[in-house]
Image (cartoon, rainbow, N blue to C red; front, side, top):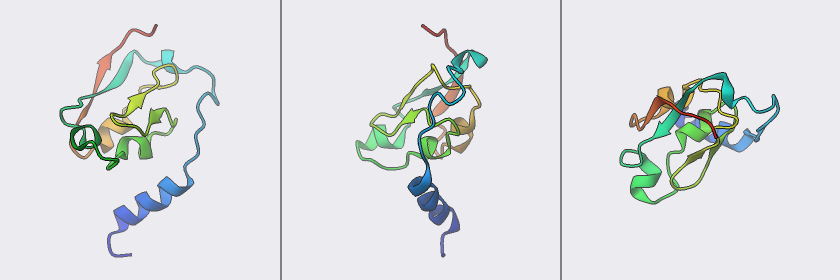
Length: 99
């Protein structure tokens, strides 16, 4: 393993399983939600299925691996792990009113 972070991400992405809704609709736990700036987001900017670090590290599996990535706020707890892990700082935590 030459590049341990990339190797770790590859291993994690191969075993992550979606668990949306395991604890019910938890989106009301926090009004702060991650907002993705598509001007900075690598997949959105490039139009290629690359990066998705936010998806990889989301403990609730609420980020869709599409271009641009989409977050299901009904289940997002607002933990901000995606924001912390984003390599280009494309995610900010903002107050969001749920529908």
